[in-house]
Length: 465
Ligand code: TYD
Ligand code: MG
Image (cartoon, rainbow, N blue to C red; front, side):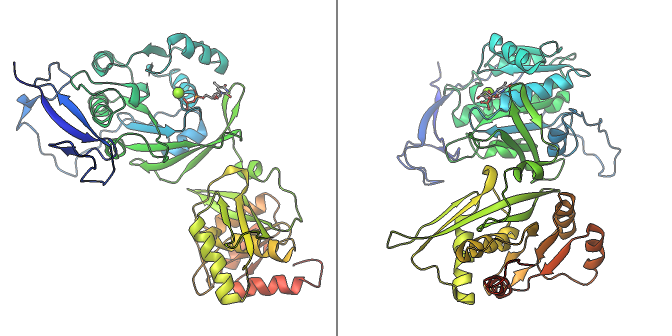
């Protein structure tokens, strides 16, 4: 009998080596290379078949479209993140920390879809009774969704790859699935890659919308090779703080819609419920007239979102003062503090700076710079930032405030929530018109020294604007 081929695969990057080594040549990771056996023959119809070689048909680019309509889940937040519903034949990967609610949201989504489509939910993590109990809790136990507990990809494919097969399939999770032609254990790079490849191939052939759950590593990326993210059409991350009830579904890759779109949900006793106006939720606990806080007019994908930024500047007991950030980039905080020191003669020496994005949100926009600077100055001077004022703008290294996109959307959202004024970057002519509609009294901030000036003037008076 032929000796099974051996190969050595890095569990971090998926690179294959001829020999074992302590460090992966491709990505430099230590102790990540493990030995795997590849069985010489790959039986079964689900596996690669070369008999079709040379039979592809070349088609004109200008040919007719053969798209079936998208399937709407009726969970608006989910549909929007997908770019307007689930595309038949597409593969969607949903990653997130354990216990964040991936299984819950997918059970809710699939039971909604099963009203009109044939849907299956295949779990490799839970027993059928556990899924049924969850279904009861969510109030969806009357649904016509079919469930199965399986981990062998060959078995799963035999139920999906049939003429009267399902239209939507959930695989919870891809790390528990295994292909029996590989000797490595489920969850290893080779298994995850092979299982996903087989399932996606069948989904594309049969027009099945495939929803894959992916575990995340402690670094926060989906476990398995990066190639998994390339293989699927859409990658969604389900995020949230354990201490908070709300969850954010974020699209990071989408072949059929915009990225950076978010859907906001709240975890309740009966599953995840949609949050239609997230700004209200995130500003719900805000106390006005407190030094060190202000409201940032942010954008998440196509939706404006008002977020409270909080800062604390306190004398440092240490030789090297601390710069601690939660929910924003520590490098950008250091930059804003350095610009204030170097360009505006504000000294933070001997002072700790703490910055927090309220509600456990993570902000990645550079447009939050001006709001961060305002919160820091407000904390330093112990003067509240203007009441009912929304702030946004990017800060450059020479302290100039740069314009950012979607000014009108941000201001309209602020007006909707009763904000009266705004600190914004310098606008091109023609902006006033939009602004008059929103009815907000805005102040253009050209550079940081203007902001410092506002706080300095405020030292002697009571109201800022
Ligand atoms: P789950 O969907 O199992 O998480 P994942 O699949 O991402 O690991 O979510 C489990 C958590 O959600 C668990 O801590 C309990 C909580 N939960 C609720 O608060 N309400 C509910 O209705 C459900 C079903 C779960
Ligand atoms: Mg789960």
